[in-house]
Image (cartoon, rainbow, N blue to C red; front, side, top):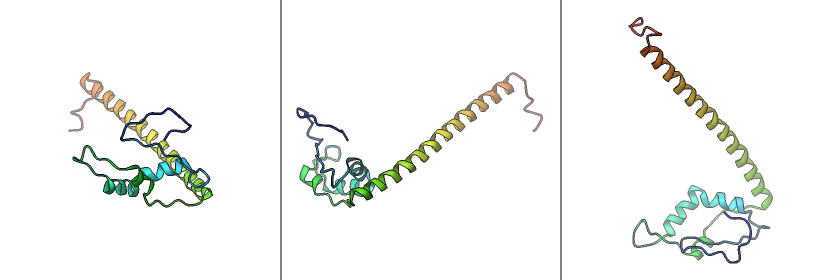
Length: 125
């Protein structure tokens, strides 16, 4: 999704510029819809081409995809909910990454201690 107006923008044949009526559909909401499994599946069905690596979909097919677009106020509510959930997930990912790094450091320290004789690994055997 790109915000703004680029009158001389040139796109490849695999990209489309879609202008939305923002009084009906918020760009971020439409971006979430386009990324959803349901819409991705619809795009996959509508796409055609000589091989699976060279599929195309017409602009008309994209514009006419059946999508649930509630009133803008409801779109904002949904976007706010998605933002909150995404923030929580991001926090959990960061915590998990910190725990993984700490576990790696502890593993490395334990191996070093065992190799240098600082701990007796045969004691518990």
